[in-house]
Length: 63
Image (cartoon, rainbow, N blue to C red; front, side, top):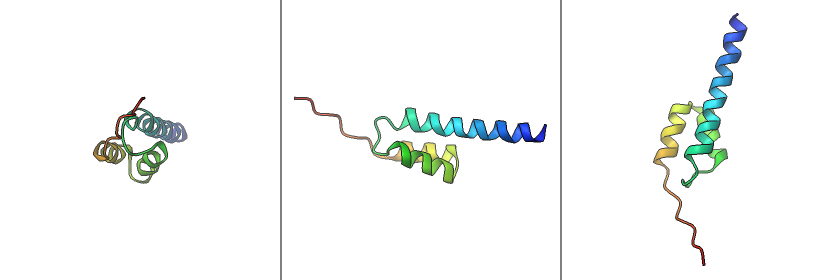
């Protein structure tokens, strides 16, 4: 039972990091790799604040 809880916790942690990296960084100046790095290094909550505080990317210019 203890092993199941550890595996489930790790899966939820990885899922949160992936969701954070995919959906929140779309119009930000930070890329997927940096988002995952900061989220793994600290926590998904701290990674969330890093993404939110990063500057927004300029809009694409279409001719």
